Length: 304
Image 1 (spheres, rainbow, N blue to C red):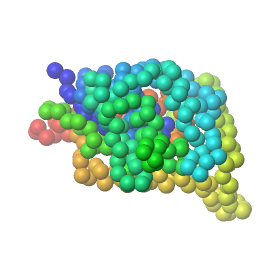
Image 2: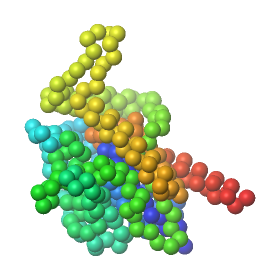
Image 3: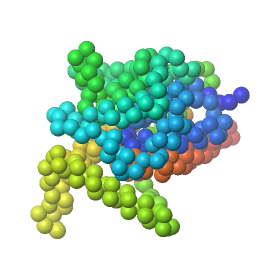
Image 4: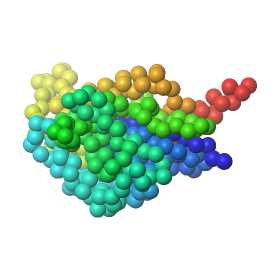
């Protein structure tokens, strides 16, 4: 009989694509996912897995280039966000279909946040894509979703790794995936001509994306070479959110300790760097193998 797993997938923008690699490695090692809870991109990957559409999503996202990403980012001049997020979810609905969460064989919960009531919003029934769009609404980046005239935003605001929201069954183990971990990231050095070319494409995308963001917000750089470059609006926002979520994740895991913790460095990529999806899937697999090795060692020590 396969070991059942209550799987919790954390928020983290494009880094959440690493959840795909974790899930694939789980299945390759003979685990059975019995329930899933997720915030933000963790909700996206978990929800699509529960719907039986994760592989189709992987095929789509791992073929992104910079043009594809820009086509899906519907920039807007709004006080509530710089990206509407409607294009990407419209495309996901077209490619993947519509689903009701209550029809899933695997219990699934997506977590979002109600800014006005300061309470979590739990989606364990209803339209999947609507739930994922709400869970991904990063404040001031993606515009919020409205429900009863109240702003619903990213689940990571209140619960970036929802260990307390996953359904448990007898005999399962709790596995958490933190893609915002404060651990070192060793970037793979480009060796082949293809890898060097991809690195150049990645750099060009980042330059183009930064230029697009700067068109919305003023930059504030050091005046001379001896003055450190100051963070712009977008960098400051992203780093602040990452730091906040890291601290909240640590607090949550002090209360509920997972049996296995899979960690992906928050320095592995930026919020919108989905063009790195192939690399991120492999990163997720590697992170799982490391966590699984530690888990097995702990089991053996506890038996001796």
